[in-house]
Length: 336
Image (cartoon, rainbow, N blue to C red; front, side, top):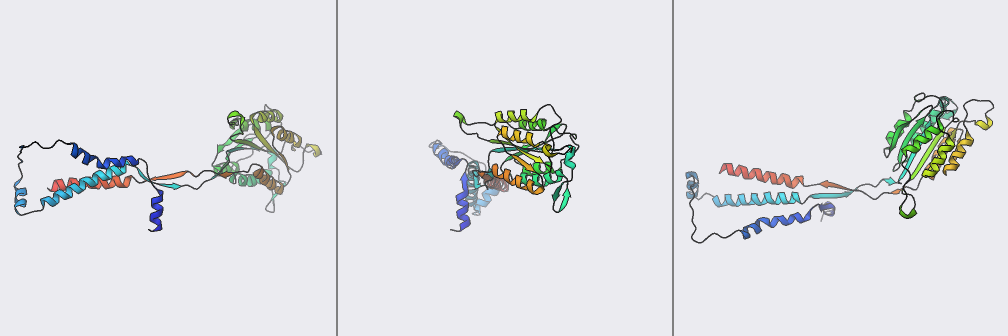
């Protein structure tokens, strides 16, 4: 048997196989009908043309057989269509982790500073974060990823979604000044927690079904908003959400030497420690790339999801065949 026939038969399936029992319904109905009474007779007025055909030995019996074949073919097509023939093909399994990751990115005015190097050119901190961040997002196939941006105000640029390409585009389209120029770290982190559903645990205190992670990227200190980063970190720990923090820029408050708008490394470390995450110090583009790889490793563990069967319905074909048989019966009746 050819390989394509074997493959077709292995993938062939019926949604309602018991519907095929209806094929015998006309025979059962014929047997159940009462027999003709003895002595019963009848008369039928026949057109003269039919009588003439019969006189010439025309194949009226052949026409009757053809009509019977069409009727049975029509019935068989309807029954087969009703049984729901289909092809069941396995789909390619995507990596799935059950993990939700919210990226929280600083869009304050200090992100315009040009102190990062990218492809041999000096670029702004925002340009470096966009390049590495979009690559990180696209590698998270199987995770639900979202994006929150913050400055004076905070807003969700992309809700958590498996469509990582859309989230990456939202990050690439982020513009400084859109939500102000100050640094409201606490509010940005709080909004990210609000969009993450609290971790659902299995029954009887089992391990969490999903993992919630926030990646916070900032180059400043909290100087706007209504909440403090430490308070929000406590809430994250209560909700079971890990917060990884990225402190951007060559200087921080410990060695600022009077420089304004430098990153508060100590606060970001506390936020990570309180929530169970990890703090990273990023001074160069190479550091940023290494951190993206490290977070990818920390939040790895993706596995193949069970393949989802794809079903291709074939019932339109027998239904179309039955329709053709009905058209043939109609044409034969008109030509009689």
